[in-house]
Amino acid sequence: MSDKATLEINGEKHEFPLVKGTENEVAIDIKTLRGVTGGVTTIDPGYKNTGSCESAITFLDGEKGILRYRGYSIEELAEKADFLEVAYLLIFGELPTQEQLDKFHADIKKHSVIDDDVKKILDAFPKAAHPMGVLSSLTSALTAFNPSSVNVDSEEDMYNAIVRIMGKFPILVAWTMRKKKGLPLEYGSSSLGYVENILKMMFKHPGEDYEQNPILVNALDKLLILHADHEQNCSTSTVRIVGSSHAGLFASLSAGISALWGPLHGGANQAVLEMLEAIKEDGGDTKKYMAKAKDKADPFRLMGFGHRVYKNFDPRAKIIKVAADEVLGDLGIEDPILDIAKGLEKEALEDPYFVDRKLYPNVDFYSGIIYRGMDIPTEMFTVMFAMGRLPGWISQWREMRLRKEPIGRPRQLYIGETSRAFKAISKR
Image (cartoon, rainbow, N blue to C red; front, side):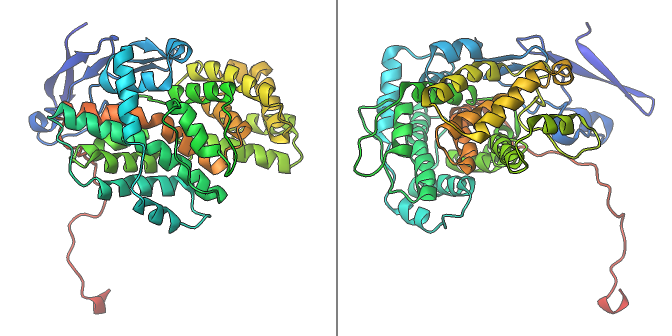
């Protein structure tokens, strides 16, 4: 294969170098395109064919169903590592030694307290406020309580900023849910692990000891690992492009949370449960809705099946399906919504229409089921997604700043009016 690509415009040929990644992906480097062609650009709505950066964090092959963090398969990480180990791996590039992991956890615990004035901000939100809006606002507000900017050339400054947000973010997540439920705000315990503390802060009731359920801890740990990073998706790209203006880490993360909020991105697991609720309200006939999903003339859309990136299967779904079965089996929940979900899953895995098109249940489908089983409110599902994605966002922001990437500034193809004269208001 040639190491150059040739583009011919108006009879003139221009050569551009080909760049190869470590997994043999090939990209055309068009940094000089406008300069050598006298202003020609590319147009690629949604950036489906445009690489915005070079990154060493996550490799994803949608055709083969491969997802790796820093070279490690998602299957092996979900089986052998815990969420804090994976967070360290994503952010710093290597799996931690026991000494490094212990220090990381200890330093995070030191920052697992929030300025009391943050409670006043939280109190100002009505209970009806969507938790993602609350979380985004509180994350942005942390900037006011930590006003000094991060010196990205200082390893110590960068590390301190990372452990600070890793310590405070689970508190914001838990408090957002407790606000929704009308429960008093809760802090974690220095004797508990990172994921155990998330559960305690979310679910402890006043006057009662909170007992950890190892099956729930394992399920949440795996969910957070599976959501920890996913290459240059909408929210991750947002974090990088906001950070490229040298906006701080907290502000960049807040922007990422807002991007994740949408139903086409992180809100997909919430959309799954809303779909299941609608099916229940209509009588709970899963066969009827599977038929509607196959009818191209029907506007009904089956949420939680198939994936815009994975064309074969979602490797994360295979892992979390096991945890979902364990959670529902252990808790012994009788819930018509979950019965409908199991019915849809069974039919999709057996129906030739879905099997032939590889429309398998994806990670959003199973994560929604688990969160429902754990008694997490539907509107909190995307907040839990953000909790998992936190180390991925941090690692992408850190990589972008350390690589000194230029400010993001996409081009456009103008299709508006050409030059015209101003008319006085009396003549319009």
